[in-house]
Image (cartoon, rainbow, N blue to C red):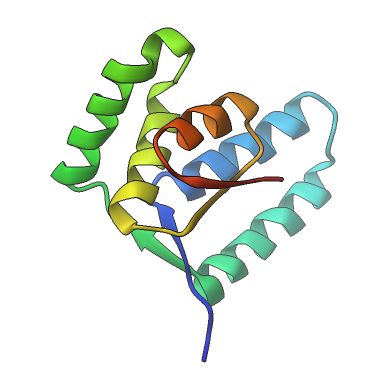
Length: 113
């Protein structure tokens, strides 16, 4: 049985943006970026279940922004957190300490990578 991880419909766009930023900053070569994108496409096909940006996710992301904007929560991070809450994911894996702190306040178990 395959293991699927829920992720926001924004995740592929955020990954692509991050990889391109690494190339622009000289931290990654174009061939490396191509390999990373191919690997992510494979991961999406094999293990990721995309959670759509439906009205429930959008409303919850807004509510999260109202509660945590002054703490530094950014809109796309609010959507990621809302997606986790709507999908009732057991754990949110991320590399952002600020988002991890806010997610914990919302009762989400966090894996800080």
